[in-house]
Amino acid sequence: MQIIQPHYHAIARTAQDYERMAMSGVVAVAEPAFWAGFDRLYPETFIDYFRQISEFEPTRAAQYGIRHFCWVAVNPKEAENPTLTREVLRHFPEFFAKPTVLGVGETGLHKSTKNECDALEAHVDIAMKHGQLVLIHTPHLADKAHGTKRVLEVLAGMNVDRERVWIDHVEEQTIKPCLDAGYWVGFTLYPITKCSPKRAVDMLEKYGTERILVNSSADWGPSDPFTLQECILEYRRRGHSLQEAIEVFHNNPCRFLGQNPKFDIRPIRVEAAVEEPACG
Amino acid sequence: MLTPKQVIDFYFLEARHQLLEVAALLDRYDAAVARAAGHDAGDPRLTALREAIAALADRSPAGERTVTLLELFAKT
Picture (tube, chains in turn purple, blue):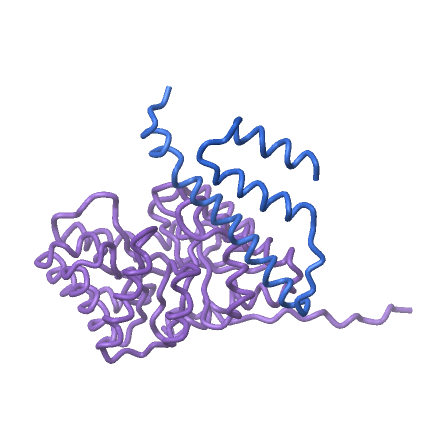
């Protein structure tokens, strides 16, 4: 099995996670910029963080044979500081030029405030102007339905290429409007607070596998990168073939992320080797 | 020992997760019945699950809910 973990906060995880991911077939990860657990005060803090995930983290992943890509964004919680947000956004183009940066993410909403919506719009706007991909975080728990609706409203008011926008953390109550609108969606598998492996497979079976990404996110809070492998196991257990699993857990990330030519990992197909006749 | 508020503070999210898993199982079963052209042979285990859910919804149970469920599941 070859796996791509398309949303993974490597900066918050130990090297042992890389080692175990490598052992289980993960060949690449993509790391969005996220909330550090506290509100950053200075643009330089963001710039150094972006440097860490675009320059250092690929070298850490490479020690385990894993390709590492990343995204840049100001987190929705920090969007409550519009002056800081604007200043950080000014630096995005220099990071778009870096060899492993795929686009803008994770932007999105937390409490769906005006500042957050304005920041989301500014992030999507700069991404579209520079031909970048977009990864959008939707709120958690009780805020999710309303926040996802607001995300769709903000996007509907802009000129976006919907095939290049990924709305993440969807659940049963938010997946259909996002898919119907033409965006890519992601299931994020957490032990308690987000979707679970079994529910993810239920949604794959109900909605099909087009424009769907599955990820573990895995950050500094209670989270487990191996919920992705649990999901693959559940998917196979229900009778789906190895190629079907590869389509979802390797090739779909290739299809979405590969829209940025820097992500040069291609979809794969498993074929039986032709048996050679016995000698003699 | 925990206060009533602490019980909810500590365990609400976990319980929410577990109930969502049960909800998903029931949805999954209904989807499987639909794929089987509506043929629902029933299953005593499913009956037990539904009785268990009803027992959990009782705000003034006669005994401990865990005991009630364990005795219920022991019959399946």
